[in-house]
Length: 610
Image 1: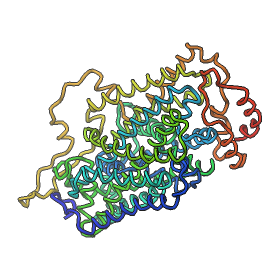
Image 2: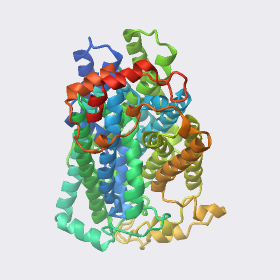
Image 3: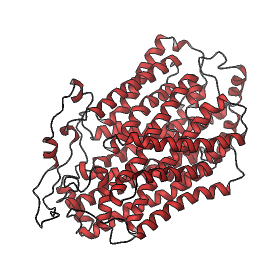
Image 4: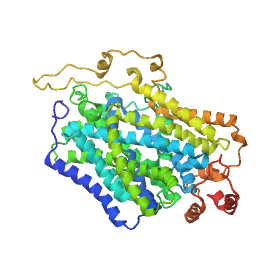
């Protein structure tokens, strides 16, 4: 009986058939794109899809790439254990979409870049670009390792699939279609995988509603279980989730993912026009709303079924990330193929994120390291290097899964990594885009300062987790569980009691204040430290007295109006083609030569309209 505890069924033959079939179909998309475009061997075609993608497939790909297996498995568990405050991220997604579409899309299109970190060299200098690229590579490799490891661990313990076999197989499939198909393969595969992910959530919700007597019963159980207390306006920065931590901290954290993260930027700059790129971000926003809502409803469905017998407290599962796979095998085992569909959904999320990460890592490595070092490489040589780098980074990401095995709450850990590393980077971009007096010395010192501060608080929080009263995990019950050997019920053990009976560990003075800062505030802290330090150092080092900066490197008033691009998309494309791709930094002696000045004058009217 569902919800009574104890062992659950394992995969049937049909589940394996459905799972394998869907994953192989995803790999087949990559092969198809490779065969169809086998004559298009240019590096731009491989890395940016020839800049000919349209808004809707790019939007679904943007959604799928961060709606990873971590999200599929971790977000419902979040709703089950902490309630629906995570639902407030719908506000964060809207703010993030506006920031990315109205500030960063026009800037990146104007400059015609392949790697987002090219901007750092244009605005500051080569050293800052190399540091920024290195930070991105380290962050993405670690995050991708977590993306591979978390679903594999959870699904291994529930389905019996071999853990490291699954890890290697996951990486191998991603390597195949990244290596052969490039960005087009990644985007179209993401579209398919997004549909599979949403289908997995719908299957769980629909079956749960049938078992519980309708969605109204699920909602009612969640209300009386305290799971629907979404809005908390407590201003305490130490509280894990509140309206302020999610809307303020979460918006900036997601903005750092979508505005400057190569995995995402590479997608929307592959669009054929600026309008398509902006539209892809707004359609992506709706996709994120739908995905997080289905994930929350899946978590509430899980609570309604297990409100009297929590599998975690009852030791039916060993980690919160195993709750949703456990539920799937509990309620869908009578329908051969549906558990396979869900497992494919979780792995589709993993595959989409890993493939996008590999493709983006290849893009920044080639653009920021190989091309400057070996400018004589032909297009065919670059294509072979792209393929070789895809294989290399696939192996690195599989290896990083071992590091991920030492992390705690996988959803929180993943978002914390972005806050710690992307926060200072976003602060550096904002410093360069809005403040003309910021120079490379200020940018470098600001970036390093912000990174040191966020790593300090992030690593401290990992070593000394916040106390239960700041986490606010909701109580869970096992009074309805059936003993495995005797037909008796176990005694009720609220999870809060379990937390309170653990032996207290000695904690440093900073543990209950600085290290207990909400993980969503890591990013705002990094942004503020980077910008304040950068401006201060720039002022001291004479940044305001430097030569006039190239105007297209800064945000303009016309950029701030959605779809306010009055000139035609073809004019923008012409401008991008005519603008120089690699510009010297502001502090270099040949930074603003007469040829560029004349070109600026010739295109002044067009640029102003843009």
